[in-house]
Length: 258
Length: 324
Image (cartoon, rainbow over all chains, first blue to last red; front, side, top):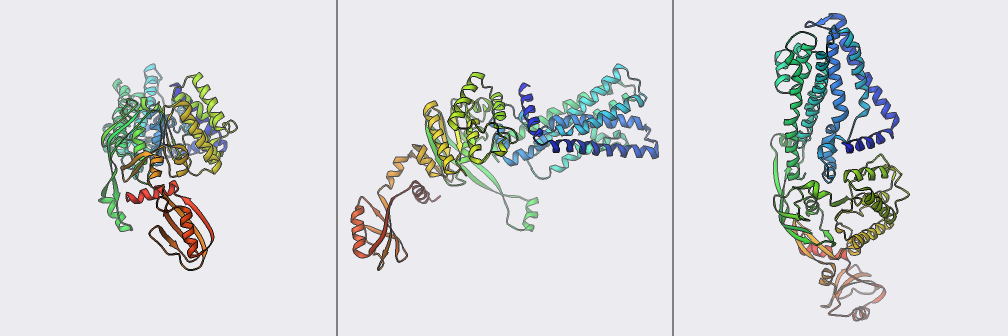
C-alpha cells in the first residue's frame, strides 16, 4: 500500500508538469458531465416523470452511477491503457519488477484530471439528497454508500475484464466501452425504463443493476425488501471472475511472448 | 549460475497476402505459420562471466533474454537461474536481475531521474544504506550527478542510457542483461558505457549478458561469445578462439597503375576495378612482404593498406558459414 502511494506521488508529479493540460481536462470533464445533467433536466421539464420516477429520484440514480464511475476511473483506469502497455511492450517492463502486475498496471496511469466528473457527481448528489423525498435513516445512508462502493467495484471489474480481453485481441475493444462509458450514460435512468430484456441482461450478465436499480428501489421506498440494499455486494464478487480471466490472459501472454 | 537445457519455443505468426481483399479474408479466416524461435538451446553461464550473445535480427536473441528474465515461458526445456525457474518464481527471480533494453525506457518520462530512482528503491525494497551506497557509486561512475534532477524527456540519448543503466543496478542485481545498450549512442557515450560495464563486472562480480550488433562492444567487453542463428546455438567459445579461425587472412587494398593484377594460388584477387584492387592472402602461406613484392612486380603500386580481419567480418563470415 505504501508503494501504491509512492506510485501515486510520481504520477501527480508527472501531471503537474503539464499544468494547463491538467486544469483544462478537469474543466472539460466537468462541462461534459454537466451537459448530461441538462439532458436529464430538460427531459423532466417536459415530462415531469419517467416511468413513475421523479426528477430528484433520477438525479440520485444518476449521481450515484456517476460517482461510482468517476471514483473507479480515478483509481482503476490504469487498465484502460492496458492495450497500449501490451502493444508498446511496457508490460514486459512491469513483469521485470518484483511486484504484482495488477498494482503496477493500476499505477501506470491515474486520472486525477477526472475530478471534474467526480465534483459533478458530488454536486448532483448534494442537490438530490434533500429534494428526493427520502427520509434519511441509517439504513438508507448505508444503502447509498453500498451503491457507490458496489458501483466502483463493478466498474473496476469491467476495467479488469477489458484488460484481460486485450491479451487476446487488440482490435475491437471498443465494444467494451458500451459497458463502461455506455452504462454511465444510460445509467442516468433506473434501468427498468429500458425494458425487461435490458434489465435482466444488466442483472445476470453485467451486474450494473445490482448497484444501480434494485438498491435504488429500496432507497426511494418502492420496495420494502431490505435485501435489495445488499445486492451491490454481489457486484463486488463480480471482480473475481474478471480477475481470473485477466490472470489467464497474463499466463497466455507469457507463453505466446507476443 | 545460469543454465539452459534444450529450450524450445515456437511462435504462431498470422500471415496474409497484401491487398484489401486479402485483409478482409484474413478477418474471417486467419492463416498461421509456425516459426521456431528457439530450437534446442542449451548453454551454461557461470557467476561473474561476461558473455556476448550475438546473432542477426530475428535469430532468437530477444526470446532467450525474455525467457531468462521470466517474461516468457518456453514450450519445452529447462532453465534454472540461481536455483530458480524464472517464469515460475518471477518476483523472487527479477529481484536479482537487472535488465536494460536499449530501445525501451524504464524511467518515468516526465519526472526528474532521481524520482524514478527513489520509486525503484521502493519497488525493489532496497535498504536505505545499500541504496545510498549504490546511488553514490553509480552517480560517480556514470557521471550523472549533473543530470539526475532533469526530467527524463529532456535528456539526450546518451545521458538517458547512462541513467537507465544506473536504474537497473540500484538493487545490486547478480545478473545484468543488456539488450543493445549502445544502440544510437555517440562514440564518447559508447566508450563511457563500455568502461562502466567492465568496471561493475570486475568490481562487483556481476554476471553480464550482452546482446549487440556493435562488434566493437563485443571486442571491448566480452571474452566469451555465443552465436545464435535461426533459433539454434551455432557457436559458443572465446573471442580469441573465433579470431584464430581465420586469423591468417589479410586483406591488401591497393591503388595502382598498370595492367590488371593476376591472381595466383597464393594471391586471391577478390575485387579489381582497374587501378583499385582488393587482394586476400593467407599469411601462413605467403608473408605480407612477399605478397607486396609479387604485386609490385606486376604493377606500379601507388598506395597500399593491409588489414587483418575485423570482428565484423568474422561475424559476417560466420553468418555465411552457417547460412543464416
